[in-house]
Length: 174
Length: 358
Image 1 (cartoon, rainbow over the protein chains, first blue to last red):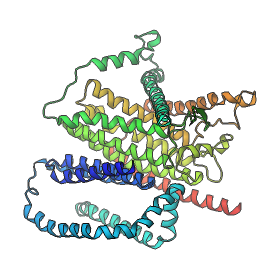
Image 2 (cartoon, each protein chain N blue to C red):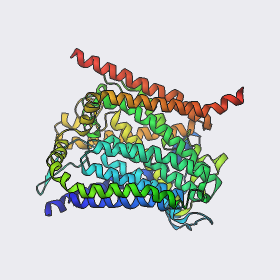
Image 3 (spheres, rainbow over the protein chains, first blue to last red):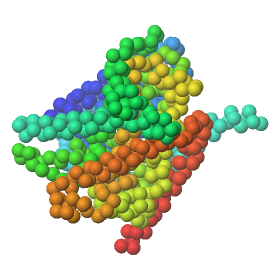
């Protein structure tokens, strides 16, 4: 049963991720990205990580993608063919990706056998424990320093964005 | 397999019952809104269909159902059709985690049933926030797909407004989550039992009065209601994002707006006003020796709280003029957000000191 769900979610993620790049209409691209976020959240739920699933939808689908749509609609880039037909760059990017993929496929069989016991014990702990509580405790004890660093970096980025956006207004006033 | 079938049947029955109640409430609300507005403006409200106009919602529904379904020229047909559904589904899906009554159980054929709780997931409130944030897609895509300036501007306004005020909704709830120590609406409601002084609105050590006010204001803004109804400002944008919609699709947007109102009222009642708990310890039914009927009293209290909040929506509509767009944004980001953040800090410190003292 869980295999079936995983297959569905993984397949849909792959298909919609490809559709994001394939669609010519940016609004359709954004929508297939939305569908993809949902299926990623579904994957989290099959791993009993409900908190991550909810955060995935709230942050990515609820906030970030809406802003994408916002920009796409305001700029009205439907007619912009400037970024289409970039086959050469795509080809250059694809070669290392393909090699990595092949390496993973050939080396993956051995790694799977050694790694499976620890992987299996993971989800069972998550079922019994309160998932949100576990994430909170880990973030604020073991990973407190990286967490604070990440929030500081985000704060700096936020202030930077405001400064850049406000520069125009300051010049007009002066 | 039969047990699975039975569970499925019970769940589907519960879902059908809740959907029925919500749709009936929406029908009632459309009439109640016009009546209440009428009385507040010293008018009668609708009086023609049925005695005192009580059949007006059915007349409206039939009219919308039989209207011609127009898709404007140059519209994106696929998205134009999808948008009302994208709007309606998130509005209804949130009701799955609302506790309607006491957390009691009974057995049917070996399956334990909790009649007033469809599903008690441990991230209940996050689930509601997640799907509430998706309602914006229906609006913004409806606006874009209509191929109309008014619709597009309405949709963009609405997206900006919903993102801004969603943040305040989320932050105002955090205080309650700190007090309750859970994300599940069922356990949050259970923790508020035993009289109105245990409701998180008034509860020690940190009464969430400010958070409640912020939640209600932001909820009004998030449901695009007066005085925050800029996405459908008639005087500027005709009807905003649903200018081009008619017939059943228009009815879907309408239904979604009212279902969202009911949902935010239910959440406010469950988080701040004790949910189905009566404002006095225990229940009157239990006191007079009929504890098996206590659920009637409890569900009625939940209904009373929800309908009072819905009345507040109408009251605001009759009282306040619409805000200007810059006022809306300034109020959300510069007034509500700092208060909500301050409330979190104060609540966290108060709860910490309270736990140290114990």
